[in-house]
Image 1 (cartoon, rainbow, N blue to C red):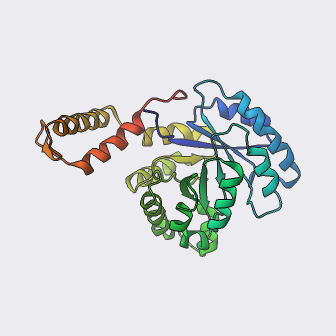
Image 2: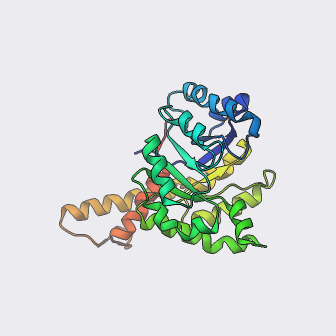
Length: 279
């Protein structure tokens, strides 16, 4: 069993020095950004950095993803050419709103896609987007852009969107979504509180913009030893019950164990599983 990534560290693709540092910062996944963090005149340099980043990932290192520019924008074609056949784990597709575009990108690149939903139009079509192509690997929110598009005046206005994206992902059989970034890098207490709400409401990891945020995200999204022991006991009890032809039993502590309880326990074990890049 391989751990579900808890952290996804964004790094500007045109900053080769930062890319190299990000690869050893301790994140479970690194996202080389070709989009918002890269000035227009450095887009080509950022694309060229993808191959170097792939070569620099050490055995057991983080997953390497790339956030491309909008496929329908001026840099989309060149970005997709750069990532196709590059050896990366997958791409993050920004401003996802059109299932047709998702299908076209999937066919063109052959890469797993995490769809970043940043507009009201994309949010309204989340269930269609989630099933647009077999290579859709997950959904997520780009909360800053989405807040602007929805004309929100408070973070609380995103609560329903967060719940909806969790539902849309799970209804399509996709992994639970990854939380959007916490932009106030200095506010680690706020990051912790927000991440704890995220985990409680169905998210399984978080995008970050600075390595100093990694310990907090890992702490929140890594089950405690006690939680792991309880989960392992639940799965063991269920396996023993299944061998007897039963599907719902009481465990040794008198707790009811049914398939739903077992599924939650398996999620805990996935979050706690070792990964080659674990630190």
